[in-house]
Structures are given as structure tokens and as C-alpha cells.
Amino acid sequence: MFGRKDSDAHKASNPEPETRSTQGAPGRKGHPTPKRKEQEAARRRPLVPEDRKQAKKGARDEARQARMKQREAFNRGDESALPARDRGPVKRYIRNAVDSRWNVGEFLLPLMLIVLLFTLMPTAGLQRLGLYFVWVIVLVGVVDSFLLWRRLKKQIRERFHEDPPRRCATYAIMRSFQMRMSRVPKPQVKRGAKI
Image 1 (cartoon, rainbow, N blue to C red):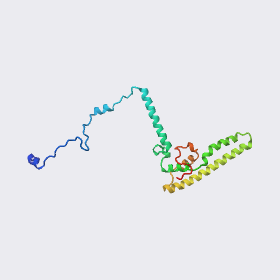
Image 2 (cartoon, rainbow, N blue to C red):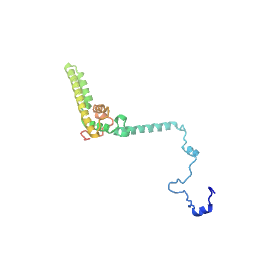
Image 3 (cartoon, one colour):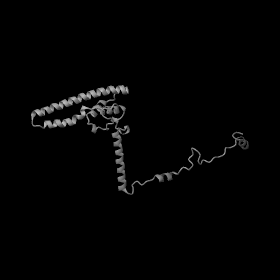
Image 4 (cartoon, helix red, strand yellow):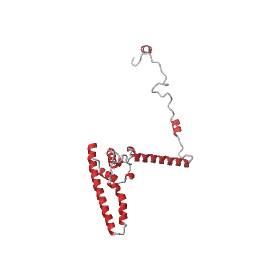
């Protein structure tokens, strides 16, 4: 009839395969799944540690080490540790281009200290000379920055086949006005190096 099979004829025509043990078979785990209670008990930790001072000190040490690693990665110029304003191949190229040359802007601060000494002199002629010197330094710094950005923009277009992103001019000029030792991320190339 419908749905009935002759069990003996069926067994004779289709012998059952031998049952294999799942122990050690590839792709099988070989042990029963642990109960939910057992898993939760294994993960359970007290909310408040028994030695609070020691736990607080350990957390503080871990946080300090994480900050030190982050700072080291940032100083190295590691892309994952950089803020959004410093990320990307174009920004890296700009940093290396600025760091590989002598910039007038990085000498402004030391020169301003010399000018300050001139302005403290009792002679009006030396004070005036100091003031003129300031204007000359600033003017030379502005011209140097303009030439730097003009050349950098051309190199970025040749190298990356696109216009530089917005605010890259400010990024390059601000870096060129910083003293080399105070730049972050730290310079990765030596002066005079080809990039």
C-alpha cells in the first residue's frame, strides 16, 4: 500500500553502512557540548575584586602601558595610531617632503628671541633695526611657504594623479613652521633625503 515498504527486501537491496565513532574523526569535536551553567560558572568573576588597591594599581599600569604604546606608534608614524588629520599616503608624503628640506619657518622662533633682545636695547636705532629684521624674517618665511606648497602640489598631482585634499596647504605650512624636534609625528626622513 501507500507508504509501506517491505523491510526485508529494502534491507537486502540497501545494506546500512557501518556506524563509525565520532571520536577523532576530522571535523568532529569529540566531546559533549558543555551546559550553559558550566560555561557561565567558568566565566564568572567577582564584580568587586578582593584586593581593591591592587586591582586599581593594575588597571592604572595597564592604562599607562596602553598610552605609551599608542604614543610610540604615533611618533613612529604608524597609520593606525594617527589622528584623521595625519592619515593617508598624501599626508605622509607631505610630512616627508617638509622634513627632508631646510625650512625658513623653523628658524623663526630662535630668530625672534634675538630680535627680542634687540628691542630691549636702550638705543632707538637698534630697536628699529630689530623691528625691520622681524618683518624681513616673516616675509621670507611666507615666500618660502608659498614656494614649498606650490612645488608640493605639483609633486602630489604627478605622484598620486589627483589634486591634494582640502587643508593640505595649511598642514604643510604649519609643519614647516615648527622646529624639527617638536614636530609630531616625528620626522621619518633625514634632511636632504629623496622622497
